[in-house]
Length: 154
Image (cartoon, rainbow, N blue to C red; front, side, top):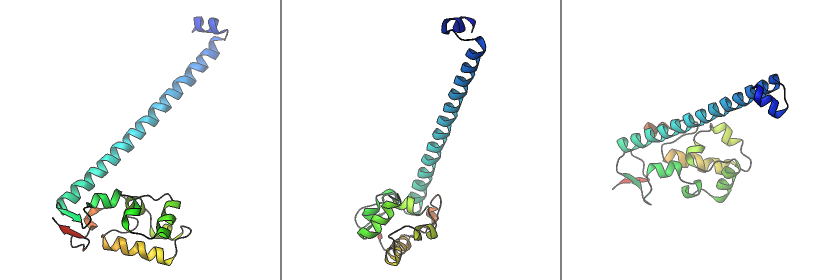
């Protein structure tokens, strides 16, 4: 540290303070990266659990238009057949997929501007038809209806 202090024309104490601050920032960055890695691993595990559950409960089910239950959950909300008003309202709330939609309780969805009773009824009906509900948090796929009329066995 003495050599560095002389080279930079700083006191040894100032070099020590800077070194301590740098190590702290490196440790913080490492913790942040580890947390993001954990979140990614948890999301991958959740998706894998959903896929396993769906393939166990309804291995050959597809929709009439060829989509799987996973396509329904993670596909764009535009593919659900909602009216443009409903789609625009959900998009303004940064809700892009059914998976994101069912993470919210209904009372939060009711607070989205430009989503009136008709839009809420449209969403309610779609979720009910597919055995889903608001606030599922983590998507318990055991609630997916096996006798869902929009599915057929191939």
